[in-house]
Image (cartoon, rainbow, N blue to C red; front, top):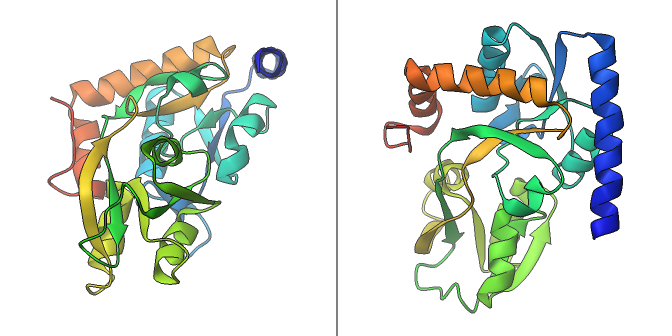
Length: 245
């Protein structure tokens, strides 16, 4: 593990130096494009959602030009480190494990709830077969809970696994599951207790890109201070969204 982290750090340093040497003001924003309402692909084939609106505003305040690219979730950190894009803005929770490999801005979404959804309301999630997206804090929690974990590459596949009987429940960010449950026509329901995980959601960056981190931190702070970020959170996640005091 230590050798892997050192190798990753070396790649990050090389990629960061290349960015600095180019004197570029264009920042490539990496996202998944498959996790509404955080990020998704709209009818025009463009990245949309809360994080698209947020990222564009951060770049505007930081006087940077954004270019949006998509990447599958399970390789999103390695492709940041290798220089395929400059940030991760993809509903990624800040964790100690991830922070060993990349760096994060302050959070732009406060620590929020994760939840279980199933097709029956009397399910014991502690002994159930639970679907979660690969390489998420939710998958890690299920693996440590005593339940049986089944992992899938995309959020849609985790929900489909419950519907087709591969899993008893899905465990994910509650903000992602709320519209899924509401639109299921009663087929799906929340079960068990909500769980607080992670340190909120932040922008992921290479550890060498300290100047870029500072610019985004300043932009996030300004959005918190003037209330713009809370307004955006309520727009995308409803009036009951977790916001900043």
